[in-house]
Length: 493
Ligand code: FRU
Image (cartoon, rainbow, N blue to C red; front, side):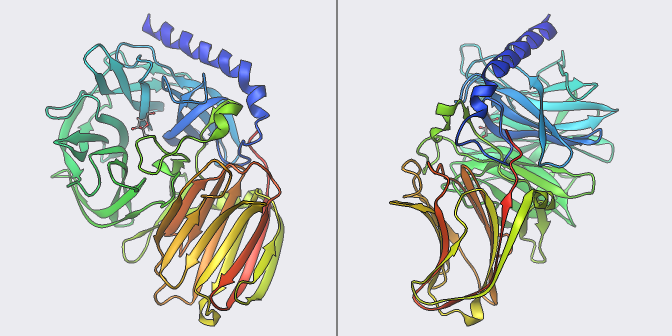
């Protein structure tokens, strides 16, 4: 009976997508190469996995409008993480434990077991006593059509954890056992809870894997836990963590105690629009993450979700990044090499000398990639700046403030819509060069700098496509060793 109800709800969602997708595909602000939906709203990456020879990526999805509501799991497959084919909706609300209009099938993850694809997700309901979140399972023989487990929910909130603060299971396998970590809140502090199971269906609590003492908020959304080199990494998106949107901790993990001992912490991305990253392993063994390119209304810098709802959509994934452990146990996040296949029309300029207040023009437009290297030894300027998409009164400015050791991404005058200056410390001690790598797409800019450790992703809804781009120096001279630019192919329609 309930199997039929989910099927009916998926068919209804598919009809809605078919009805609207041509209109939505005309949207002027749609991205050109960032994964997005055919219609409606998208948030977190869910269930990222390589399964039977393809990348399967799922996402939090409301096919019915450009606003968050009634969460489904959308589904897309790819051979290369760049070119995507949409598959039918994988999960739709249908059961007493996941059928609330302000709930549904919340975030989770995927694993292959005995040739089947298993999804673990959070069901959200409200039966009159507030929201209840519990962990649930669905499985599929073909990786396309899913069935919810009749014994759901498989984990309910433990004593002391409020029913509305227990979600986002991330599953993995180790030594023939399955483990999952999920986000929770206890006594107003965030926790990551660890569970184990022999069969993915029956779970036993192991320990509090890690917790906040307030410095990282009161609730962790989308925790993710994985080995990297000889260390373990915990990532999460903290609620109540101030301006932090996505944090990583590096340390050691003991399977006997179920406790993570972290020694290093850092930001995955310092921008306004990078949230809920999830990781997975590529078939060649890379640890890759994808994050959601937007933010929530409870964040201190939030203004709104941008103007794209007028075009019948909202949300995309930021570019996939490979996670790399550095010698000092910090992490860097490097755009995956597959992105290079989008490049065309390479241009290289070398040894550009800029006097104080001097500008060097780069090609106009907003769909491009750029790499730039500043020779710090021959630079006396106090600031190096990038002025992007400038036209009349509008511009987006990225400032490398060498005098004060700070990087700023200023979108106060970007598009007449967005606001705010994202910023982070820029530690160039002992460095001879400043490296800058930027991906610009129709509605966002992703900046990578300082060895891919100072990354800032922000949405910019520029109303025109032909703004000027340039690099400039301030307070002295600058020597740009090299600027490379590429046009990027449009792959999302
Ligand atoms: C994170 C999040 C998750 C939740 C989902 C709901 O962005 O709030 O905690 O599962 O989005 O769509």
